Amino acid sequence: MLYALELSGEHDYLPVMEAYACMEIAGLEFKEHEILDQCLVVDINGTWNDIEPRLLYVAQRLAMSHHIIRVAGMCDTSANSILQMAENIDYLKHIDHGKTFVVRARKIKHYCDLDREFIEGHVGGRIFRQGFRANLKTPDVKFRLIIGEKCIFGPVVASVDRSAYEKRLPHKKPFFYPGVLMPRVARALVNITGVKENEILFDPFCGTAGILVEGAIIRAKVIGIEVRPMITSGARMNLQAFGVDHNVITGDACMVPLKDGCVDAIVTDPPYGRSAAIKAESLHHLYDGSFREMYRLLRNEKLAVVVSEIDVSVFAKDAGFKIICEYSQRVHRSLTRRITLLQKKSRD
Image 1: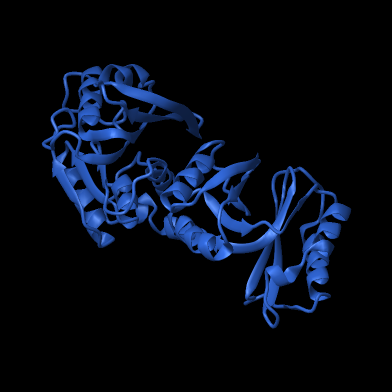
Image 2 (image 1 turned 180 degrees about the vertical axis):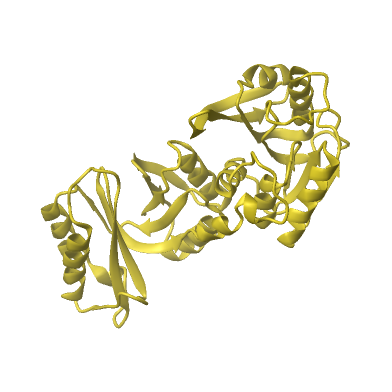
């Protein structure tokens, strides 16, 4: 069965990777049907009753998506094609008698010059003529048109509460320190590791705990290390503000007091010149030692995500990691972050 994830467009690749990881965590069997600009269409095995409760869980985890839509129709983006598609759909498969509906459209960039209100009204009219009542404020079913490279149409089965991430912006937390990841980015990176509930997520440079907060909210067990005592205290304050269990200690990322192979995922944003409190012989020494510790602590076949301004591939390879992929994210004119996905492969 076809479902479409309406992606945020914040990054070219991260939203797709996050969507795949979250569907795998939810136990869905799927294959890629098509990747469009800000829209991912997947073919999921199973029935609606089996798939859609799991998609609700997926939406609860996602950060870089807006909605998940059950695909009722796909076509090109001409008005005639969209209206003909809408005319041919059997709406009883998507809305029960007596239920109300609304149609909302989103235009992706400038792939077409259709007027959004025009197409919403005319598609809604076709649903109305099949015997269903419209309700613009509190509908039972929300139909959505994603109009980009193609038009994707269907009922929304799950939505991402992106406003929750806005409430967790760094300056809104009890303890603020500049230069940290935004909550949506932190959550997406946590999701990409595939960490599940009750598994251990580790951040050896946890700072104010932005990554750990996102991991704890999805019920991972989080452990963090921070070298600066004042920031460690701030990290604990932030985690306590969200009422989540945590373990944050003041310590050295090059000498972590944890046993080998004890963590299921690592996400970290190590210092790269923006911090004046690096207690190491040099940045090279810090990266070399911390990557070796991350490799030691991570279970075999598990994933780590490292965010940095510098190329970390040499440190990762020297420690024993396999580099799965590397991406860049432009933050502003003077800052581009590298995002490197690593996997621990046994040396045996």
